[in-house]
Structure formats: structure tokens, C-alpha cells
Image (cartoon, rainbow, N blue to C red; front, side, top):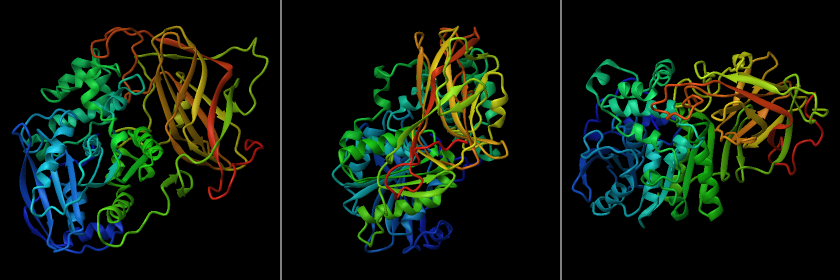
Length: 570
């Protein structure tokens, strides 16, 4: 949910006239068309229906023929980086931009309650927008992370003036973000709550205190017993909502109604560009959004790069800015547009960018079975009556450490995870060396014949690629909290577009935790916040039915059919 990892929070932008040169320097660095106009910046207050006023900066191009109007709503202030990448960048190219601080943040009145007021406040902002003398009559929304949620909130009841949306890594269902695996995603959202609690503290601004907690610090906090007390000590009086997120773990609880806007997916009609990353914490929702809108016939496009959430304003910025400008020019502006070459653009890790007609492309299922000796093979093992199952022991006092992957941290993304295979609490199954490249598009699935001596357990699974030198790097993760009667476990991993190169091997990792990304399972029925007792668990994985299923696609996506029917394994 946090999109700025800058160590200091610069002052709000100075108001007045700015030259197009201020939007050109970044544009040149990102490979964008040159700026076309100067612009002014004016502070405005937007009234809400309950009398609360929300502050915004209006970037007004000094041209008689503006390209359109953009609305950007978020909780992280109106200074750097948002003033630059949403305000100056677009105003210098002819757009009126309203960059607004949501309720209770950076001078806007009221109390900040994450997600709760965004639908109503967004609608009231549009009422104000259509009354402005400079309004161009049509507008688009743009933004990432929480700034994407505010767009989905507005799309729940789309105003007639809305012409297009550009949503980058923006969730529509906050319950799915925090509880989607059955275990609370505590690393990401405790870190975000800490940021929101202190982002306007003068001490944090002047001392350059980091915007995101380091992994050791957050692991220490959430590893404390009880966790709730340690987390509240960190947050102080800020983020009063944190405990309530953990206490309401049921998807059907009415508590979550104000924090999800799933109906927007059924009501949106305007063209939507979705941008995301394979290692982004909201990837699953981005792919769900694309599939839902595509099935409805909405004009939707999808771009997914090799990025984490924190990369969207760094490594992914150039691609996202170029595609956003083209989308807006096509559906909002009056100038010449550069249409996308395809509906879907994905970065195939291990290869590069590919254009696709849809996501996912046509694939066939390839099964790799878990075999004794910690191997993966296309042939299922036989003669299992005397074969001992694979086992590992999970100890809540020494949980398996998070290593890379989708994580709201600078330490997320693609990482060397070779050491995980050496741990006693991890099962590692590795294939033979690939004799040919293997392309996987979609969601791998792990099926396990599983049992444990404790009904309160979690499972973490990961697919990695082991190179010719024996170094392993993560490709896709999955996590699930199991029920007491679970015997056969199916875990869907994160979506991927990955080319396993000839000479490499495929590895499957299985563990009982992934800490601190997810709250560790104490092995008891005690609540997450107040639990003090812990109980280890021994996991058993039987051979025969346990397997990894890979959606394998063609090596050449322009060709018909799929990859070789014979084995790619040596």
C-alpha cells in the first residue's frame, strides 16, 4: 500500500508558474515525448458533503487547448514523488491535474480511515470538478497502490464525465490483500501502518527516518509475544485500525464492506489500463481485474513487468509513464494516439517483453511428481507401500525466514534463495537438468498429500530456478493456512511468465511458514494479537499424488500449439 520509499518527505510544491522545463528533465530520462506547455500550480480546497474540506493542488497548463483533466487522490501528500510523476509530468504535456490529499492527510480535514471514505469523497470531488470554469468536460483517473484503490472506489458508481482510468498495482478488495491466504500479511501492513502513523511527523521528516521498516526491525516486533502489544508500542497512538484488521478474519464479516469495492468490476465501462509487477503484493488482484473486465467486454489492457511494489516508481516508472500517456492520449486527449500493439504486454523473466492477445495464453498442463530422494520427475513414483513419506518439523520459535518474493520492502523481488534448500524445516525437490527451454505462463499449482500432527498449520510453497552453477532464484510463491481436516492440499501460486532455460533445473520448496511476511502460526487456537503459547508441528508429505503442475506454453508465442510433447528433462 505504500508507494514512496524516500527517506525524507520534501516540502509541498511551491505554488505559482512553472516552466515546461521542469517536466522535461524527467520526461527525457523516461523516454517520453517533449513537454508542450508551461503550467501553474494553485492550492484549492474541495468541500465534501459533510462539510469537511480536502486540500488539492491544481496543475493548470497555460494553453488554450488542454489535453484533458486528470484526477489523482491519495494519502501520501502532494510533494515528491507524486508532484513530479503525476503533477508536473502531465501538466507539462497539456493536462489539468488535480492532485488531492484524501481525508485526514496532509492538511485535508477529517480523520483518515483507510479505504472507508474514498467512494463518497471521490464522488464529491467530481461534483466540485464539474463546476470549475477550467474543467475540460471529461476526465481520467490515474495513480498507483492506494491511489489505485481510490480509482476503484470511484468506479463503483462511475460518473458520466469519466473517460478512462490508469490503475497501477491498485487493489479493489482489502480483505483479500491482508487475509487472502488465511494468514494475516503482517509484514506488509504493519510496515504500512507505521508509515501512515508517522509520515507527517516533523521529527521523521527532519531526521530522514526511513519510510519503510527494515526486515530485522519488523521481524523483531511481530516475533514478540504477544505480538499485538509489541505492534502497538511501535505504532503509538497512530493507526488505530491495525488491530481491527487482525480481529476480523472472516471474509463475510460486514466490517469489510467499506474496505472492498468489488462491485466496481461489474460497473466500470470506461477503458482501463492495468499496470503491475510479477513480484507485486497486489498481482493477484491485478490479474483478476483484467480477467473480469475482459470477460465483460470492457476495453481493458494489461502490462506486467518484473517489478515489486516499490519498483513501480523506480525501475518500472519509464514503462508505466509511457504506456499511461499513450492510453490517455487515445481515450481522453484530442491529439494523435499511439495504440498498443496488443491487449497484453508481459515481461517474460529469463527472456524479455512479449506482446500477447490475452492473458493467460493457451497452455497445457505439465506435471512434475515429488519422488524419494528429493527429486521432481514427470513419472509418478510406484511401489509406495513401504516408502516412507517426506517430513519436516516447523517450530514457531524459529520460523522459515522470508527470502525475496512479493514483499512491501526493498528486500523483496527476485533473490538468491539457495540457502533455503539447506534448512531442516524446508523440503526441497529438484528436477533433472532441462535439455530445452521451458516457458510457463499462468499460475503453477502444487498438490500435496499432506498430514500433520498438529491441526493448526500453514504451508508455504515456492518454485525456483536453479542455474548451472547451483544458484537458486525464486520464480513464484504460494501460501495457505490449512483447516483441521485438510488431507489433500491444493495451493495456487502467483501468476508468472517465465522461461526456464536449458541447463537449469526446477526446484520446489515446501515449508511451514514464511516469516515475517505472514504472521507465524503459533500452532494453537490463541488469537494472533494476544497468543502466548506455541506448539511445533511435524508435517508429512506422501508420494504418489503429490506433484507440481506447470502451465506450459509455446516457446514461440506467435506459433500455434504448445511445446514439445516429449520430455524437456535430462
